[in-house]
Image (cartoon, rainbow, N blue to C red; front, side):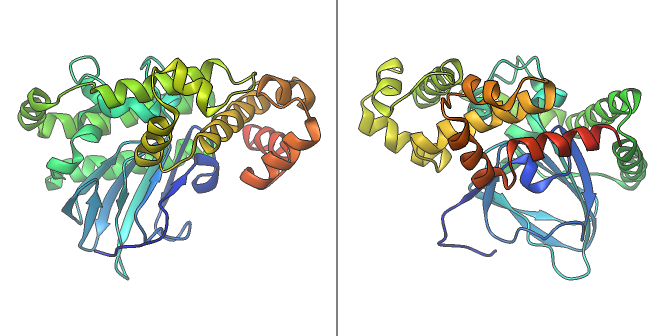
Length: 304
């Protein structure tokens, strides 16, 4: 497996997908990621042809035709596909499929399996191989074709079907590995003190996006020392506190730009930027375009 000494990259949906909620693509649609990385959304990879290995968390497991890989947000992973391989990648946000899960994507690893068993394949991919037999693989291939078609249309009813198809894919994987998933769930320790601390920090950031925030303030809110919090964030997310706050503010900005008609100035204020010009610069630096251009792109996509 390839290794890298470069800093781990955390990718966002707008960088690796055509839509912010759900997307599906096959090999060749985008440049392949060949180094270990994280992303802030859920991913399912399906092997269609060719054999390789996947690095997921601390494990290395086989991956090839009929294999599925379930990647939890912020889980370090990479699947290097050899020449001639065929595969499908499905990306989706937590809010698209599971808005009822009251946990930040950074804290999903500590969610109780008993409360959300549908997360099982994502939680335990390091320990299991999800391999389908030919009848199941044939069904899955048909579902992928439907996902691609409805994603291209982006109709209201079609996206509801997309959610249903995603649940069928995850449900099929759970069904075929039900006993092993239940066994692993018994060993799942649930929320550790480290996850609890990180959750308190993320909640503090989420609830205070409109205000000025400092590492010291966040540490105090989470009952931590600033040094411990800085080290915890770097270890668990690969980010500094400032990078985490910026990411969450711009994620909120993208939501407001897409889902509301409020002026850019008001969006900036809601996201903690009193200076609209500075907000525009930071948004363009991270997202690659101005807030207005981003909104125009999203409107154009929704209109088809």
